[in-house]
Length: 382
Image 1 (cartoon, rainbow, N blue to C red):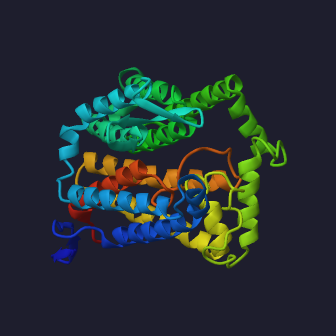
Image 2 (cartoon, one colour):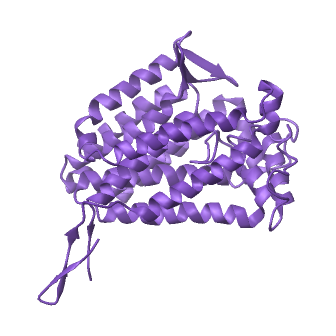
């Protein structure tokens, strides 16, 4: 990319031939770390349940291939295409969330119905598809309005809340409070970027916290998670077990870790070591240095992604980029904070690292869209 000078002044120039390679490199590094950690963290559970220590690595590698195909395909599709298909994509995702709740179609695990099984097709998680659909829908909706109009409470804020409410109802029926909270944060970041008032955001945050309080009061397991957050020693063999084992893993790692593959907590002490708790295994094996390396990659990804958003050629591209980057970054830090005891435990996976084919494919597809926006980004000179 370059900046052309006329009469001593810098003018913007758009380079449509290259995408943001540093961002792609950061994603590739996270994927590599993820494959290594899934191979290590999943060995004990794979041997126990499937008599194959490499079971989860094979599935994750397949997910990487599918996601890579989606990434390179989507980075070639002009990003404005997603504005044209945003509405049908959103309502198709609503339909998939409804299918999850139908017995015989939706499948359950650990008391939650979050997956769809259709014949020979591997189970997939519609809520991951909904994240991308919601981002595209909101980007198209907000970009079709004048920036000042977004502040109108009855004409735009109320419809915005109704859109979120329709998604929230279906997500809560699964139930999946962590995913709902993540979608709420993504939507708020896009609302703010589109020109929403801080006062309206404050009202929505307050209403969201009040709604969360109600959800905690009506569901004992959520109350137990809150009590564990407030007091890590509460119910150490029950609701506090996972956080307690995660903190033991992180503490055991020290500065440099116990060594790759040498985690003790992954041997059936730490629940879900290859999914929700993989950051704890990473901290035990690679130590504080390994944790900071992963966190730094997410911070760098945020910098490059929001830079693409700032330089996007139009409002739709800007909002689409903000939504995608916020999804990746918010989800990463929600997982890291939860497993470190800095917020109540959620079932949100660590992007690009946790085991999960649907999440991986959706995230890599979203990165492909972001890379296409970067092809059209306008680099502004001083």
